Length: 299
Image (cartoon, rainbow, N blue to C red; front, side):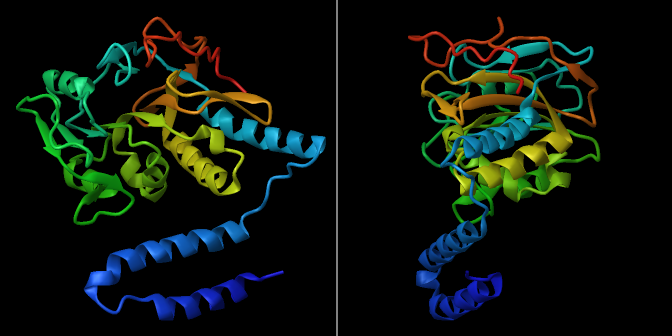
């Protein structure tokens, strides 16, 4: 069996050969380094047992324990509201923007109704999307950046950590985050320190690729992210995106894409939610099909 020390030596040997010889090849060398690190990390990850009934039960037990981090809570004394589009691009959040001085919208594409609604409510919004030339809407409180959101800032990218450091002005949560970046959310949350994430009063985010939860590489990062978010926030709403399939993972039915709303534990008090999802505030992302039924979303 290859030990961690042996893997480290092999990586050091490879790194000496792979370090960039000039600025021109630094970018692709960085990507090569990242890919090799992922390969090494995968070798060290525990493997889920998959080949027997007992293995499937062990996997199901593990997944259920992690999914319990997403069980919805009710913010005591604070109602919810829908902000943005009537379908895809709209989010259910707590109806409370007091003390919120800035919002981030990661992923704009051709629908920034949420951004516009926040701006009309008096909250300045920094919009980020590297895939479009400009945002669809114009408002004095909307500022568009043609950059992608990544774990680390770069010439064509920005990080959540850097933005929080720039825009938060208080020890109390004073920011609002909306994120739909097609799977990169896991890396972004994973790289953002707790103390910076905690500066958000609320977060609404579309989480992708839940069908990959049986993959160790994906699962252990997802678990790390959900544990981090659970420490700082309570889940106040869940809604499944009906544009993509539902999946059975160890006989647990899950949507591949799930919209989740979070509220700060430092700002609100919570009790178990008695709701079933979807609620009257929800709307199908695809209007041509009915919404997925999540029920109480308890595991």
